[in-house]
Image (cartoon, rainbow, N blue to C red; front, side, top):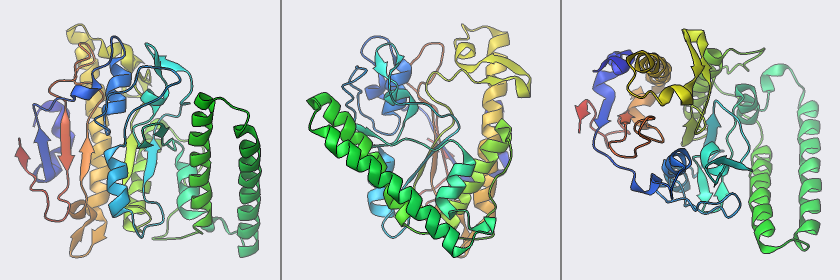
Length: 333
């Protein structure tokens, strides 16, 4: 294993390293490699360069969810460590929808992610561990439902007054609202003594809480498909908490400077440490005669293969898990 992958040494036998893969649809029209790469990450579709006429494709997680998600409360979950609106322009004329989302249920419908583990917990488990009575839980459900009814009624009245482009945007918004409504109608569920994350969480605590929630979602069969964005395209998060100050995106333009490359290696190694935390959680969760890691396939990659060249060739692709007996790991292809 190279230095950046050393945190994964305990799971070397569970890894499948893929080299030489190219994501041609991620190449943008002119500038905009991060929007092109992020949007093509799971869709393998070429994004229409626009801030309003959003056109892409269905992402592979949603194709999987259409089959694997049958019978689970959440056919898929969209999670991340950074929020962000899908409106406006985020990369050289490309809509922010392309840089803040990797899951798409249709060419014009990005699926927004949840970036607060407390919100994720409440969506999954409805807060049953907070000592609320059944009457209190039912009252909260009715209030949420009434708000959604009000939103849908207002939106329906507005729809007839809009032009075609705005109607498409409103349709996407209504689809998202209906998904929230369906989740709230699903009822509460507890499993495995799940505890809600509390207080102001540091970044590492947030990342580990998200990993724990993913393991719980699989272990409780609440969902069988999860997409997870470590950061948005063009993320300028600072990693000063591991001794690497400065904006990540700016550091990625390393210009082959050894000092900058060393900082990037520290960030990448830290990211793989937290990926190892997820693998550890999956390996500890029992599933049948083995573990969840035996039954799961995790794909880790990026929007570009190198931040300095913004290339989409020889993408870094790492698979972990066996998906039952479908995958034979412990190899480099």
